Length: 365
Ligand SMILES: *Cc1c(COP(=O)(O)O)cnc(C)c1O
Picture 1 (tube, protein in one colour):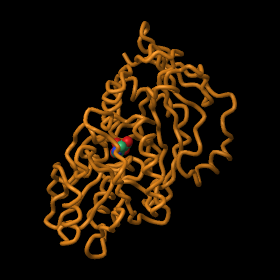
Picture 2 (cartoon, rainbow, N blue to C red):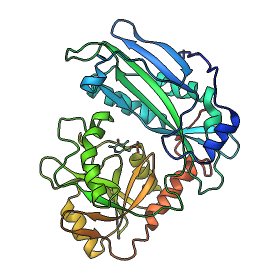
Picture 3 (spheres, rainbow, N blue to C red):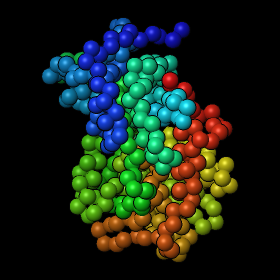
Picture 4 (cartoon, protein in one colour):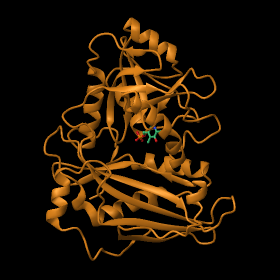
């Protein structure tokens, strides 16, 4: 039996004209819909109080343990409007599963698929008018959904909290790339590390992002938009970016991505790219890849493309890797042909423009 959500509709919903105006140019993560989901958990009562209620500030006790010890996890997933007006999401069961993996690592309670996917459906039932309508095939607008879980117990002792809240908020998002996809420069952090063995690298938690921001600042001071991290033990193996997984296209058709370890976050996009690559006749390979291999194979032209992938930007071609003392560029014009082909294949499925052969879509509205 699916749990039902009690709905408390907002008595001050955004006026249609204001919402339409926001949806013509939503940017990213700046505007929020009229409602949010909340489910409470306590050690005695398990998950309860499933609610869709007006979007608004949270009331937290200043001693809430999330504010002190950072017991927090989150997800990122999108809702896409198809040409017939229906609204769909992409592989939500993968996000639900990862959310449980993250929860276990952060000693938070696990949420079922039913509650995770049910919460998204319940929010969309109220706020579906906030899903932007693409104006063309190149318009990658969507409603970005942010499920998250925080420790809300007012207690300063160090132990897993006995009171936890789960929320989902939603934010309309424009295409990540305005004026077309263009390759980005990436900074190789030589000092900072994202994750160490036995740590939280595979979990989607705020703490990993907090720890990456100093490296992000360093990247920006070198004219780069993103940071690539090496492994913490040897400073030798490519892991991923702060919030995206990496792929390397080889001249002979191999598509290489670092093998999953507990220091790499398993992206849903990464997993989907591996499947689509096989469909497209490429040879996916999950294995360790070193910074030396990147440097050498880029110089010889054996690596023809590098790209990053994640829900927010889908697939982003990487133009160059910048380090303290070198710039690693690819031979040729870096046409990003393979990256762009995979990108289009994925987007066509997500926006309902091609057959959903793998059964990846779930209808929300
Ligand atoms: C979210 C995230 C990704 C990408 O995951 P997707 O499920 O593809 O959006 C990659 N790396 C990190 C560190 C992340 O937090």
